[in-house]
Length: 388
Ligand SMILES: *Cc1c(COP(=O)(O)O)cnc(C)c1O
Image (cartoon, rainbow, N blue to C red; front, side, top):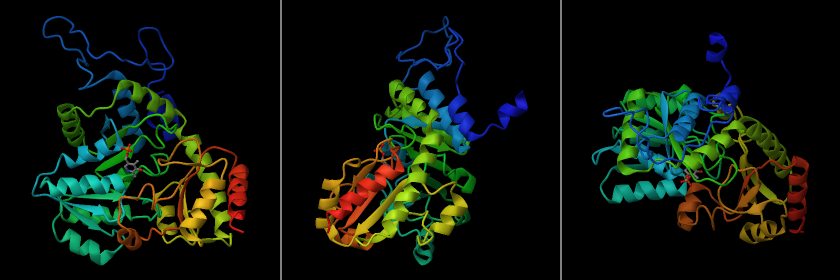
């Protein structure tokens, strides 16, 4: 049934890729290959695998699955989301300029700033929703532009196709950190991206028990160059982590579907609450990126943030009153979390930098999990009552 296999839906690929492919025992679930090394089939008889830093059957199956889900030529699985971003940066030289979002993930900002300070590349931090700022940045003839959409923690949406047109006009490559949506909800390669970056720590693994990352590339030559560099520097991911992450990918679609349905309910509840000054969720028609998100995403995702009128003191009361939500960093797991960006994820920014980025002291970021939406709303409702 060749026609059926080539036209499989991504939901089906996530579940079936590599299932029942074991030739030794017919195992339904693909085996976990922990072995560091592989015998040669005689003198000069290198098999597909020889050493697990270079390549490993379990990690290769995860990479192949991610590449299929993103529509890329291949993928390289590494030890963290940061290693994935740095793997893309490895393709730049000291004279190359990279455009980075001014409101990017804090770890990404730190990595780019440190590599810039060491003379490894030139980083330009730019508001990618500002056309004039983009004009000025692209006039510098960048080699690469890194995009994050939706952004953290305000869920700003960046026009992927628009950025891609600008990048192509100057011969720049485009990388999209698509961690907040996963391939279930956004496929940047279809909008012109050359690289898709994931912190697989988040939705792809989805169970808050693996730190990992991946880069999916549109072109086979890029896949080869990235795989070669990951082998040279030794940042490839562990087989055990790949096994767990692939197990997470099996349920990616139903998890994300259910989580974003609950996020919509929670966002609508918060939007009408008198203690809440603003809700940042692309699924609300009032969100400035609503139409763009509708056009380039398959859903609005399960991340949102909201600003309390009472500032940091109100945040303290609410995060200490919630019982189902836990106060923790990270996101994308089965469990619902709240975080206070100014004192947690974005604490490394100065108060002035946060003010410019629009991150208020009363902001709470929410990662919506798989609990019943009614319980999550009731939990927030009770916690907000403590504000009087
Ligand atoms: C978490 C995260 C990263 C970093 O990933 P790690 O797996 O923690 O190294 C990068 N980008 C985004 C958008 C993230 O949320």
